Length: 348
Image 1 (cartoon, rainbow, N blue to C red):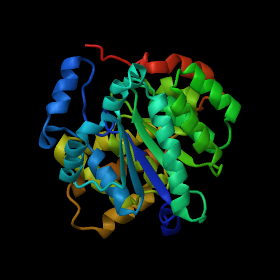
Image 2 (cartoon, helix red, strand yellow):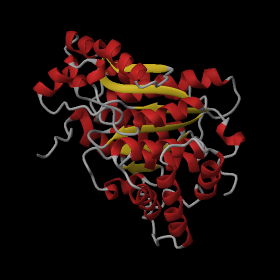
Image 3 (spheres, rainbow, N blue to C red):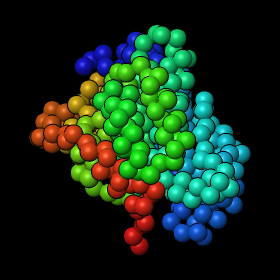
Image 4 (cartoon, rainbow, N blue to C red):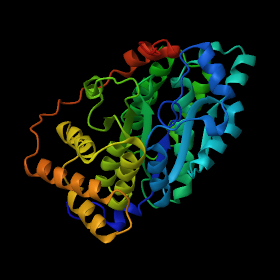
């Protein structure tokens, strides 16, 4: 679509909900020692995932609402905010986990559980964003998490609740099977009853921090985009009309200048998405137009070579037959993920 990145689509209401640990920050918390080191790190010592900051800056520049939803404890707010400021990332809302409160109330399951924390937070935030939209139409969203825990499950459940695909009775069963605490169940049901149903969630981005196979996420359907690097997330968002092509070029330039990507590596990031049917070649003309219009872009030679390689991929797109999405059994998934029992430890 030649007008995939037109102004009207970019100006539509949009919310980006982003996780922090292993999605934005390179965080280790597989052992108690990891937790201590993470808590004591100064803002300037925290390392962002390559490309994450520049992508969020590009989203922020479009006027998108940025909601950061993290499992990090509330006691880390000041340091996390300082890190985001160092990275020049603008955010509208930062939600952190009340771990100290959970401990004081002897809610030990809640320390690891994601369903009972993230789903109520997402639903409450959705209701607030509906109110902010003043009835101007659906506020579309993209969400980002990682492959270490239950993000794809929680985000997919949230998306289907927003679409009206999950009844109150089914939601109650899911939360019960997940052993979610009663006050969080009540919060979910209340917020779900106040939602304006529709196709709210456009994309669920899953950062493959643990190098999981993308095929592991096929059951969740094409809405879920597993990605290896943030240039890939940028390509998808650009073809969705949420950032412009010049923003993608700036992300690509960062990978060249700071992370030693060459033109072939940049282009192969796009080819990988084409092979998995997450992009359709619609970014090429906007990329070439943006590159020709900006003489000040760094790494221009690499960016031009990237466009040339993508042109070849678009001319002869890889053949791929996407697997049909299955109807998700959220009750069983809730049982699998309850209490964070499936939290994946890194294999050394």
